Image (cartoon, rainbow, N blue to C red; front, side):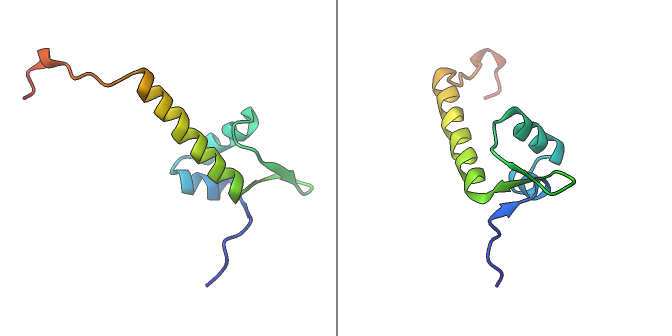
Length: 80
């Protein structure tokens, strides 16, 4: 069984997050997701631990958002 690599490509990160490589690139370029640029062609790599930290931050931000904006069912719709 192969060990988990320390660094992931943007495509790998996109697969983990179930999003596009373009979205991951935007996260990296905005500084939301720490990454390094390596090689002559400037390929981006994200450390697995940084991806996990990012995911934890997103859970925390989502929880804060949900707490500040509670879901209220619209009883006037009559969907019961």
